[in-house]
Amino acid sequence: MALMRTAEIRDMSPEDRTAKLKELKDELMHERGAAAMGGAPASPGKIRAIRTNIARILTIQKEEGK
Image 1 (tube, one colour):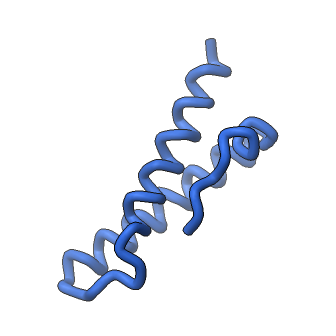
Image 2: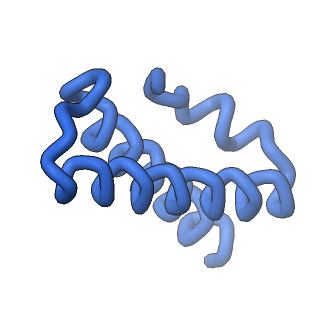
């Protein structure tokens, strides 16, 4: 999971952004579940990268909502 650039997020349509946000939240839930079950994460920074991407999308949505 690579970090999304802000420009990439801004270029998305609002519908695409909402779909990507839902996808990222589902992925985060899955990763947290795997970590809670005691499984070693495939890549240690993946949860942090997902959370950062979610925060970037939410920030841009809030900026454009004003």
